[in-house]
Length: 78
Image (cartoon, rainbow, N blue to C red; front, side, top):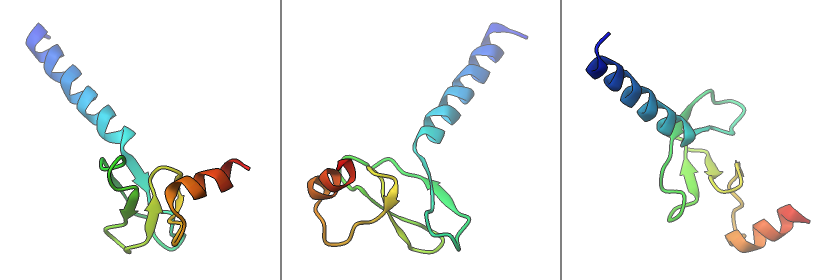
Protein backbone atom coordinates (compact mmCIF):
# COMPACT_ATOMS: atom_id res chain seq x y z
CA UNK A 1 0.00 0.00 0.00
CA UNK A 2 1.18 3.47 -0.77
CA UNK A 3 1.58 6.23 1.79
CA UNK A 4 -1.30 8.12 0.14
CA UNK A 5 -3.60 5.11 0.50
CA UNK A 6 -2.62 4.62 4.14
CA UNK A 7 -3.22 8.31 4.84
CA UNK A 8 -6.65 8.11 3.18
CA UNK A 9 -7.59 5.13 5.34
CA UNK A 10 -6.37 6.93 8.46
CA UNK A 11 -8.43 10.03 7.63
CA UNK A 12 -11.53 7.87 7.02
CA UNK A 13 -11.06 6.08 10.35
CA UNK A 14 -10.56 9.38 12.15
CA UNK A 15 -13.75 10.82 10.64
CA UNK A 16 -15.68 7.70 11.66
CA UNK A 17 -14.28 7.89 15.20
CA UNK A 18 -15.25 11.56 15.57
CA UNK A 19 -18.75 10.80 14.27
CA UNK A 20 -19.13 7.93 16.74
CA UNK A 21 -18.18 10.20 19.67
CA UNK A 22 -21.29 12.25 18.85
CA UNK A 23 -23.57 9.23 18.35
CA UNK A 24 -26.49 9.02 20.77
CA UNK A 25 -28.91 6.10 21.00
CA UNK A 26 -32.57 7.01 21.41
CA UNK A 27 -33.65 6.36 25.01
CA UNK A 28 -37.21 5.42 24.04
CA UNK A 29 -37.39 1.68 24.75
CA UNK A 30 -39.75 1.21 21.81
CA UNK A 31 -37.25 2.80 19.40
CA UNK A 32 -34.07 1.20 18.05
CA UNK A 33 -32.76 4.35 16.43
CA UNK A 34 -29.91 6.71 17.17
CA UNK A 35 -28.13 9.58 15.49
CA UNK A 36 -25.09 11.78 15.60
CA UNK A 37 -25.59 15.01 17.49
CA UNK A 38 -23.14 17.89 17.61
CA UNK A 39 -25.09 20.86 19.02
CA UNK A 40 -24.51 19.83 22.63
CA UNK A 41 -23.29 23.20 23.93
CA UNK A 42 -26.05 25.28 22.39
CA UNK A 43 -28.93 22.80 22.28
CA UNK A 44 -28.83 20.06 24.95
CA UNK A 45 -32.11 18.53 23.67
CA UNK A 46 -31.73 15.85 21.02
CA UNK A 47 -35.00 14.88 19.32
CA UNK A 48 -34.90 11.41 17.78
CA UNK A 49 -35.43 11.54 14.02
CA UNK A 50 -37.32 8.24 14.13
CA UNK A 51 -39.74 8.69 17.06
CA UNK A 52 -39.30 12.33 18.19
CA UNK A 53 -38.46 11.35 21.79
CA UNK A 54 -36.31 13.96 23.51
CA UNK A 55 -32.99 13.12 25.16
CA UNK A 56 -30.79 15.40 27.26
CA UNK A 57 -27.44 15.23 25.48
CA UNK A 58 -25.55 16.46 28.55
CA UNK A 59 -26.92 13.87 30.97
CA UNK A 60 -27.75 11.01 28.58
CA UNK A 61 -31.23 10.72 30.06
CA UNK A 62 -34.77 11.52 28.92
CA UNK A 63 -35.27 15.26 28.62
CA UNK A 64 -36.09 16.80 31.98
CA UNK A 65 -39.09 18.92 31.02
CA UNK A 66 -39.50 22.00 33.18
CA UNK A 67 -36.10 21.78 34.89
CA UNK A 68 -33.32 24.12 33.79
CA UNK A 69 -30.08 22.30 33.09
CA UNK A 70 -28.24 23.51 36.26
CA UNK A 71 -31.14 22.34 38.50
CA UNK A 72 -31.24 18.93 36.88
CA UNK A 73 -27.46 18.64 37.21
CA UNK A 74 -27.71 19.35 40.94
CA UNK A 75 -30.46 16.77 41.40
CA UNK A 76 -28.51 14.13 39.49
CA UNK A 77 -25.37 14.65 41.60
CA UNK A 78 -27.21 14.34 44.93
